[in-house]
Each structure stands twice: as C-alpha cells, then as structure tokens.
Amino acid sequence: MLPNYLTDAVVVAIVLGVMILVHELGHFLAAKGFGVRVRIFSIGFGKRLFGFKRGDTDYRVSALPLGGYVKMAGDDPRESHEGDPGEFLGRPRWQRFVIVAMGPTMNVLMAVVLLSGLYRYHFQKPAIEEQPARVGDVEPGSPAARAGVLSGDLIVRLDGIVNPKWQDVIAKIPLSVGETIQLEVVRDGRHLDLTITPKAEGRDEMGYAGWIPYLPAFIESVSPEMPAAQAGLQPGDQVVGVDGKKVYDSVAIVRALQSADGKPVEFAVKRQGKEFRVRLRPVYSAAGGQKKWRIGVAFEFPFVVRQLPWRQAITVSVEENWNNSLMTFDVLGKILTRRMSARSLSGPIGIAQLSGEMYRAGIDPLLKLVSAISLQLGIFNLLPIPILDGGVILLLLIESVMRRDLSLAVKERVVQVGMVFLLLLAVFVMYNDIVKTFRPY
Image (cartoon, rainbow, N blue to C red; front, top):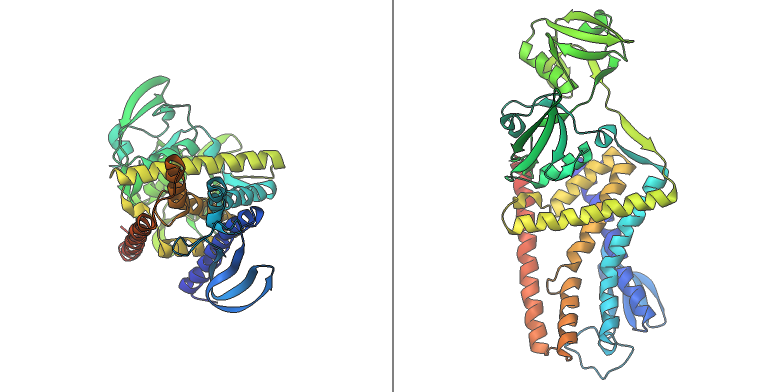
C-alpha cells in the first residue's frame, strides 16, 4: 500500500485534474459553438505526448496530467488582429462573455450533477442533523457553558432562525467566531434569552460553542470480558444516568468515566421500558489508539440513509450548492474584514490531505468533497481578479460600458497586477497549509 502522503498526492492530482479539465471543456464547447477556432485542447500541461488533429484543433495529451487548457485563435491581445470572426477577439463582446463564463459554469454544473447522482442512489447524513436542536452535553468552560446553556436545553431560536435543527446550528456556529449570537432556549417549560459568543478552535480556527447534540445513549455493542459484559449489559440498552445525574448523550458518560479515575460508577439503564441500576468499575485500557478508562461498550450514532427520487435529489443538490455558495461569500467577506482567521483557507496541501482522508473514508465522502471543490473552483474563477475568468468578464463589462476596447498597455498592466496577486495568494495559502500541518492548534 502507498503511504498516506503519496495517496493524498495521487487523489488530489486526479480530483483537481478532472475539475480543471471540465472547466476548460466549458470554454471549448462555447468557443466551438460561436465558431471560434480552437487551436489546442490539451489534457495536461507541458510537452505534447500524443494526440490527433481534427479540423483546426489539435487534441492532445501532455506530460503533466494536472488538468488541461484551451488555446483559441486570437485570444492574445498582443497579436495583430484583423477582425477575423474565427478569432476570439473578433467575436462580439457578449459572445466572448459567454465563452469565458462557461468555464466556471461547468464547474458549478459539475457540483450539482455529482450531488444529484449521489443522492439519487445514496443519500446519507447523521440523523441528528434533522432533529430539533436539544443540547445533550456542555463542555465546562466553553462558550456555551459561559452563556448559561445546560444539558437538556432546547434551542428554539438561534439568531433569527426559529426552531432550528442541528443542521442549522452546525452551519451557523463555525462562521460566527467572536460574534454575539442571540439564543432562546426552553428549560423546564420556561423560555430563557441567552447570548453566546463562539470562540476560534482547531487547526482552521473555526467557531466553536462547546455543546453536544442530544443523542440518547443506546448501546450498540458490548466487548466481551469487560465490566459492562460482566454486569450483563446488552446491545439496545439505554444509559440514562450516571451517579444519580441524567445524561443526554454518550459524551457525558465518557467524561464521567474519566473523572471517576478508576473508581466505581453507578449507571441508570433502561431495557424494554424498565429502568435498573448497575455499578461498574472502569478499567484502564487502549481504545482508538490511546488509553483511557472504559467499561467496554460502543454507543449508537444513527444515520439517515435513503434513495431520493430524481426530482428531489436535484432539488436537494441545488439547495446545498446554493447554501454552500452563500457560505463561501460569507467566509470571504469575514476574512477580508478580519472577523475570521485566514487559517480557514486551504491550499494544495490542505486539499490533498482532505482528499486523501475522504478517499480512505469511502466513495460517498469523496464525491461530496469533489462536488464542494468544483463549486469553490467555479466561484474562485468568477472573482474579479485579473487573469482569472472573473477578471476577463469585468474587463468585458467595462469595455461594453465604454463602447470601446481598452488599450493594450492597460490590459498588460492589469494582467501583471493579477499575476502578482495570484502569486502572493499562492505563497500565502501554501505557508498557511504548512503552518497548519506542523502547528495544527
């Protein structure tokens, strides 16, 4: 088997290569549709390895298999042009606009198509995301604890979102570092108004509240020869209390075991509607690569798994991609206004690491990641940065308003500025990735 870093490199090369190829295919199809001569359609960059020529186009495979490119006749303003309609600059501005915009558009379409196809045959998400936002556990000292949130609280309003589900909370909190969020919770029948300020946490310094969703602690499996098995606990049993206190999720149980430090712990357990108590002494043993106090049980973490009809699959895919687009612009805005850390950005190294992790997790997570990256690539290329598609579109709009072409000198300066900016951005995200790799927290 390949080492993880080699697997990561291979996976990200394929993922980015396919997405760049799809992007260039958009330019190619639009150019052909408007009668622009395409001189080269290349899979990969660098030296030509092999291919064939059909019409005006050299279809080739090049040495570096990292995407591809399209070379159109008359796409370089430094060359002399005579208004040839077969050249890119010889076409009307609106057609050039479409040709340029089709690259990002294909990336967005790819994101929608991938999720639609996946959800048609395998739609999966944690069941907790579709449930009301009831808090199961609160980490001591966390923003939620300082806000006065308690285990069992039901969040009925989250900064304007009424009766949020956990998927709403999960989407909101990471993007709200340092922001004061208004909360309304129901506790023992009483409505309480609270405020919470998520803090930066983790390698990406995303927002963290410190609460855990309410998830009944049903036992999924019992390890033989461990205290739980010796006491007669069975799969399907629900742990509802520890040392006389109610528990709303398995996290509180694990915390209680570690706090007991080997001393006996009393569990309240429900089986077929009847509650009983059992006293167990945890043992110190390895689990998940580290040693900790255990009783030998694994708890359920249910998923919703179903196949969606095509119409619903497409609808869900469009909604998710739309929400992800809005989230992307929200993150960019907060980074630019210094309300979020730039560590939340990932470059090639971070994308490679994440691609490798998703590949090892399975085809479903990998396809979701590919869809997300394709969407991000489309959005990034639409940003009004010179030499990107968005920068070309901006210049076309400016020329349309002026009703004349900008001078070659102006265009060259714009391209130079764009190249310097992208070079600095590339250096920054690479440095960011390296820092997060060697100093994740």
